[in-house]
Length: 222
Image (cartoon, rainbow, N blue to C red; front, side, top):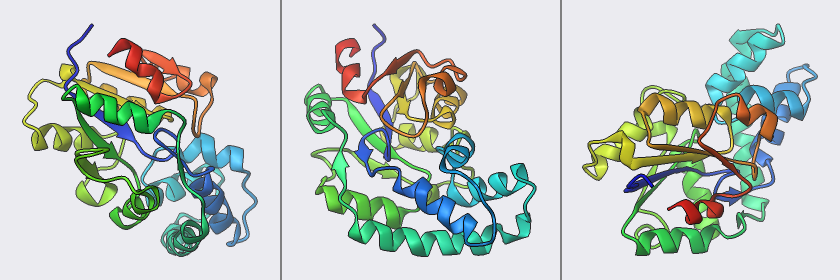
């Protein structure tokens, strides 16, 4: 098996169960502007993307006014902050043990996300996940100039831990965008999980190396 030294794991839907509240909120924020998009459409179009970019793409696909993307994004950000304050957030089944076990095997764990730092930190605080215990670094949309599927976040993660070969990196996520990000970086392993936004049929389009129910199933191959 490949010698994996770094795991780059998406947050919502991959390590954290937040009941798709992001995409539900995004749907509501768009529909506040007189549109009628379904949650299914939002999930297939926007999963894994930086959220302003996702809203712009969604408006483009439904023939909406793309100039409304920024005010919708601001509306979405306000609503999400509020939703998260009241939300019960849990780790996805088996994930905490998986993270601790991987750390015990001296593998580095980076959580990466299309969210802002503020929102990502809010999630980690709710879970009581601590740097150096559950993960080694957090990389968010705020840290890079190009959002996924650009490999910039993975390159930054590699740089932080002085890993020069992308073959030593595993990327896991619950959306096609996550897998494309991993492939664009040249990751040694890409793993799609069924615990989040997209289903098997959608995820298969990106040809991940594995599709697991949850990321903890990856322990068997590591």
